[in-house]
Image (cartoon, rainbow over all chains, first blue to last red; front, side, top):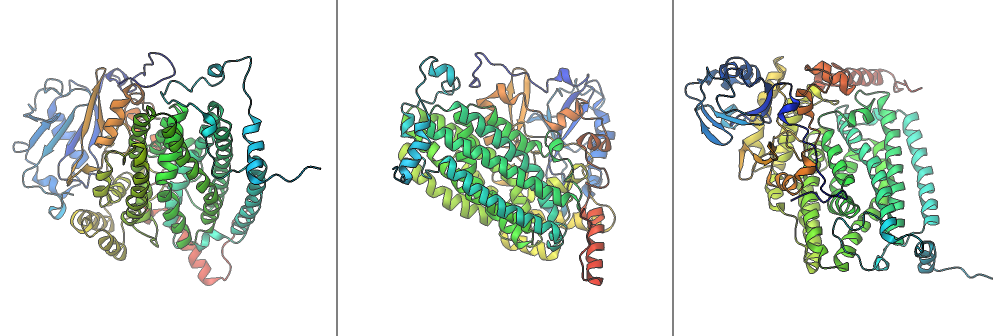
Length: 120
Length: 509
């Protein structure tokens, strides 16, 4: 449904198209059942960055504070990408893994239930 | 010899009789915004103002209130009234309230001036004019309070600049910008009915009681001074809905859509108030859960039973707020605890007594979901490892709050919704926020999202100190945990001095 506007055929300019991010894509990551991190996070990275950068540099910086981080074994982590099951290829780029601007990655670490099992 | 007019006659002379039928311009040229929203008004004379307040009486009453208000504010300043608050932690609730709400009072002043200009009916014009002036008065009195607290505490110094830039202040800003950029009927439904009538008690009652409980007479004073205006505003809100509903049956689905939208927007905005009640008042008044039960479930429920005769029903997704009342304030405090290094106020973890109060008030949620998280944070802070989230959060495109709210029925899983529009994907925290976007994507695709703007390089730089500088916040002073704050150091010093010397410190010019 179009916006009800006093101007006929009113159109808004999207403020967050990928063209605004200087060659990066902005995407989101959530570590399930670890709500000590209050919300999913946002990253802006070049689409040709290898997925392994995310695993080895970006996510440890984002989530390393949590005591459960020690339990992370990437070979066992379960992923979804935009709500579909996802089997990332670490050596391939974000783009080749199907990650696009505004994608949502969610990961679950088996056996990690947050602080005292509270999902925190 | 003229006889004295009775109230009804005075109202007639001083409102309706001031209007006239235009003869050389068409009404649609004079009031160009009356058609496009689809609201049909057949007879503006059916507008009833239950207050029947005329402009001359209005000036007289308001002037009297101003005299009292400013004498109390002066006395507060002269007597170092800020020293009587329960604890300097309390002032952080004021920082959020005064930097978040005061610009909205000013926006309301502008908004009512604009819609008062657009409505053809004299009764509605006068009511909007008075409310516009009320709102200007409210922002002025709040700025006086800001001015006083700003002499002693950090984070108050540039509220106007901050309003346009700081990530969490974009939540109240976007709420009002949304209303002001709508048509006049949606604006008045949003602000007068959905906010002032249905939800304002949740803003004013607990917050002003909280101020009184915590010794903050400056805030109590502007609260009381505003309260008599608020009752008039609430009456306007109800009159607006009844008037539109009675004018034409085609108006009902349009009004219902606005009620659905603005209830949800208001509910999300009030999460910040609930968080203040549960976490930021050293002496608590009532919990958010209790306030929601009284002011929405009971009072709001009765209101919508009354409105059922027009074919209006409870706002969509109200059921989710009943479950949410056990969770949203804890989740919001977690958000600000995560990101207080980028905020103009301090956060902290509740002490044992406060944790027990939260357990008692939230028996179905606090101990299970939030206490373990908070105790862990507190232990880490005490060990010198205070948690700050190092990564920018994902935001909801509609309410602009970080996506920290959980899925209905599952308090350990974040709620995710998304929509695709013209080649871009947009994310939302809830069904309510997604619906709002889906109804007006051309509007909400333009939202100025603080996190996205930082990543686009529009906010002064990529580091926290650079962004804070762009926000006009003082890094290391206005931000971080309360425990290490200059506010706490000052407070402890002043209170220590006060114990030795009978006189409170006097730094006021």
